[in-house]
View: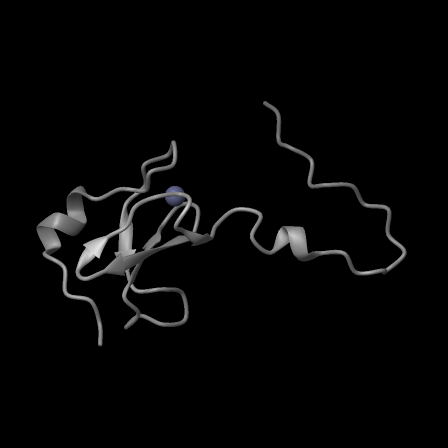
Length: 86
Ligand SMILES: [Zn+2]
């Protein structure tokens, strides 16, 4: 069952990360999930008993979530993604 959150509440909720981006209901691939997804970093925050748990420690996904999984032996010596510097 999809989580029911007050649209006004959803409007004031924001990602606890530094960008404080708005959140959307549901999880990626599962719009009916009891979760909130950050529109910026893609972190998925659980909603427990109707209470959004907006803690980075409790979130799943987000930046580097699958990047850390790239240990394929394709013979590439590509280092970590270069950080864009202005
Ligand atoms: Zn975020």
